[in-house]
Length: 378
View 1 (cartoon, rainbow, N blue to C red):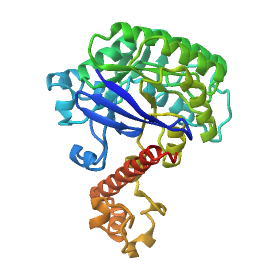
View 2: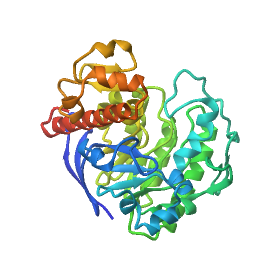
View 3: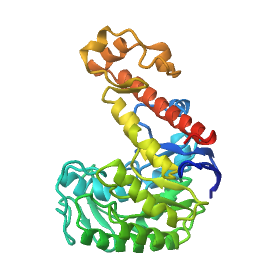
View 4: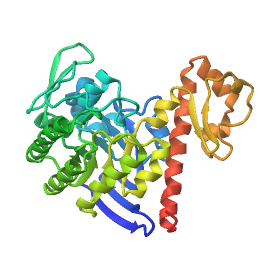
């Protein structure tokens, strides 16, 4: 199980400092939860991830179920021993894959809507590549194409075998293009699945319930009240989060007041640099995001002076470190011209160097936000 304590609440915003205790270590909140989809933060070792000031990771139930399978991980002593990772770990439920392999792929959209017309997904619509039923979701394996079924019972069983410190209830991560009727129908499934997840869980792992409802205030509040009534160990706000930072903030402000504030709050799948301070000011404790390493593997570096695209030839003549103000070992030992060369030559080391720097930069950025809260400045 976990212990969570709110250490300080801001008087200027809804931001707060917290301390999470788990069997595998503690976490200062608010914090980023880097994504270790297949049991690894891409290109980095666990030692490097920790050196980048990471406190906790989230791995992916669906992908680990496919490969190497939860049975292999369980026989290896659980995910911590399998990964040789001595920090707290979360596992998602597989609910995000309902969206990403479904309507997300069909319409080319993410959790935030950008320039697409609304209401394209009607109440009884189905994605092209999977089937959503009242009992769960039928997928096709990404490896061999075989049919797979994942529902609340299956998700909990897999997550218990994986053995993370914190697990999540199975839900449908809803698409931003859906009508209100579709979202309302989906919400009924998510709520029913949440009850089944709690009933099925036999382990001592902490479990977070997920609030859905898309951009609709009444559905978000309905979901928050229902999930809050079920006795989860923490809360997560999931699904699509509107078309702007303002909409995301509205969704959080509609939702969080209905939740027991003594328990941790997680925002699923959001964490771009310009989102972070806004969501923390709304009262979010944890948020998972692939941005630091996703962009790092594409040669995009985050710095105090802005974003650098190291694919650009101009950086081949630049002898500066990625960021003069950054104290990570990458900035201490390498220069932009060399890293740009590695990126343009498609050398793996380049991806690793930028990924490490970005992760360190993001965690340092959030460290400064915690300090602002501590000093009453945020």
